[in-house]
Image (cartoon, rainbow, N blue to C red):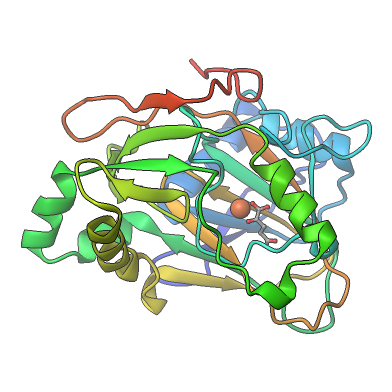
Length: 296
Ligand SMILES: O=C(O)CCC(=O)C(=O)O
Ligand SMILES: [Fe+2]
């Protein structure tokens, strides 16, 4: 059996077959998966027979795991597994996972447990294609910018949707404030590819006012979310999606009428981002070393 990679769209996403990720993997198989991830940014594995331990073991092939989340609790008896449950909040905003810490996860895995009968797709965008799409003057501007990412910002939730439980979840999410400055254009450490590294936790462009920051971030973000740069993944049960968190953003569409939807997330610890001039991200507030070991 040899690994087969089949593109899902021109710019992002591929299905991987010919490898059983529930068992031990040979170094060549891990190498082929890593290579496919570098090229396609998001990989879909169908009919996986994994439990939490198996998902953790698979993710560990790519590096050390983070604990489930800096501030949100793990699945019982699985400290590296974050429950992604429609009951516990919905990630229907564009983001890159946990970019408010100094070394955000390099990769995320999502495994489907319960899939709603309709809707509930995950959008995943290629932030490198977005960077390449920028007209030259905007690319030159982006190259010079840094952004502050934080978990503590003004999440817009309509008042009628705030109930006690949601307020408690929000309080837990922001129970420790993190703030980190990252380059707006990040160089991928394995491929040298440049990508826009912004997303929902990027709230402020260093040196600009909040209002100016919003305009610049919105302008750049529009290139990330261009339909050509986005994979719309429709879940079926027992799938695993692996995406490169260094060079993508994602969005969980809230279009399933509150029907049950449950995924489990395991993330792989990442490196400290580096900008095009070799300068590293720096922490402004909050030490997340308990959450994510610094990957070598
Ligand atoms: O529910 C999804 O499809 C994605 C959830 C998400 O963004 C996350 O867990 O990081
Ligand atoms: Fe996410």
